[in-house]
Every structure is written in C-alpha cells, then in structure tokens.
Length: 125
Image 1 (cartoon, rainbow, N blue to C red):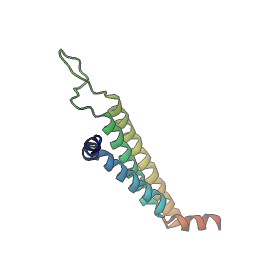
Image 2 (tube, one colour):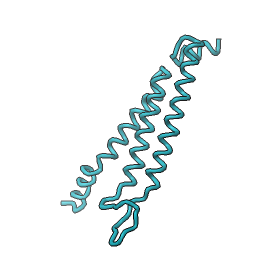
Image 3 (cartoon, helix red, strand yellow):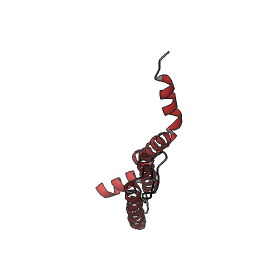
Image 4 (cartoon, one colour):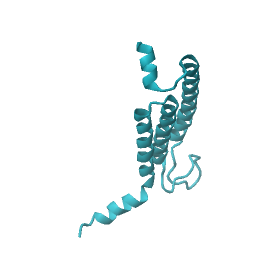
C-alpha cells in the first residue's frame, strides 16, 4: 500500500477551507461572466472578493499560534499583516461596491434597463 495515501487523505479532509475558496471563486467568476444583469455582476464581484479574503486568511492560519504580543515563553506567533491587508481590502471592496451601485442607479435612470446586451445595442445604435 502507498505510504503517502493517509497523508493525502488527511490533507483532503482537513483543508476544507480551500474547497470553500474554490467554490466562492467559481460562483463569483460565473456570475461575473454569465449574468447580463449589472447588479448580479456586482454581487458576483463581491462573492469573488470574499473567496479571495478567505484564501488569504486561511493562508495566515498557524496551528498553535499566539497573538503577536511578545511574552515570556511565547510560541509561534501569528503575523498580523494578512489580517490588516484583508481589512484594507474589505474597505476598498465596500467602496468599489458603492461606486458600482451608484453608477448602476445612474445607468438605470438614463436608459431604463440593467441588461448589458440591451445597453450595448442602445450605445451602438
């Protein structure tokens, strides 16, 4: 029997966060590419961003890690940098979503539709 099989099974059963990342990225990308509705595209962008956030936070996890406060007898420390970057990315993502939704409201008030194909026909005609 292959000696690496238990290790492979252990990796498959313990790293379920990566499965969630792949599912979120897939759903978000599918919504961005396939949906003709502009609001659904913004929602897909947010789902995609959430997958990226989960990926970075999952990479930052350290088993048995302690907060980065140096004390006597402290063990492995967790780097706060990925968490800070994700907090910044969340703020940028919320701002981007607000601007995108404001543009969508303006497009709807001007053209009366949120369908991408209809907007292309109106623009080129």
